[in-house]
Length: 80
Image (cartoon, rainbow, N blue to C red; front, side):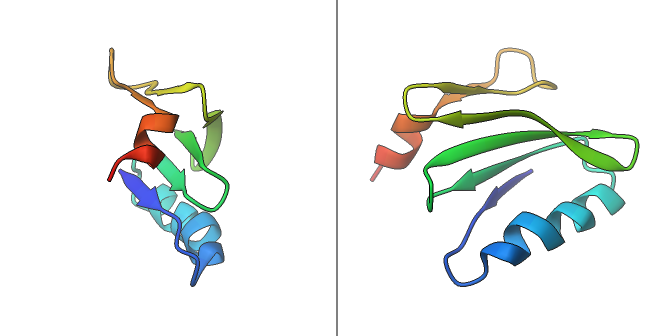
C-alpha cells in the first residue's frame, strides 16, 4: 500500500488513514510525502504501525516485507 500526502489534507493522509490501514490489517505501507520529500515505511505490529524507516534525499527506501524492493527517494521526487 502506498499513500501520497496531499497539501489539502495532510492530517487525513498521515493520521486518519494510518488507523484505517491498521484496522484493515495492511502489513506494510509507505507514505510518500512531497511536502518534506521523504518516504516513510511502516510495518504493522499487532494493531499499530511502527516506522521501519523514514528516508530522505540521498537514501533508498527499503521494504521490510518484499525482499529486494527498494526505491531511490531522489529519483521518486525528481521523476516527471
